Length: 72
Image 1 (cartoon, one colour):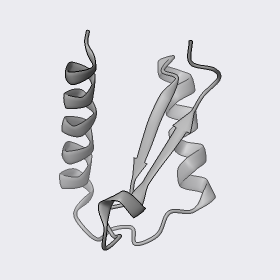
Image 2 (image 1 turned 135 degrees about the horizontal axis):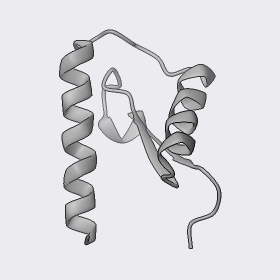
Image 3 (image 1 turned 30 degrees about the vertical axis):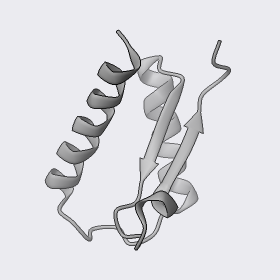
């Protein structure tokens, strides 16, 4: 699997989740959300996750990169 395929999966999942939760459900990100992403990473065995806050005026301000362990 190359970087483009991984990126497509990440974006597809983010859009699907956003549609299911409905826009505007969460306006801010708090430590509980970060912990939830880390828990999902741990359970799935993934090392890297992104928490996307669609409520920010600029998307780049709403992206939080989270690591579970070390990436080799």
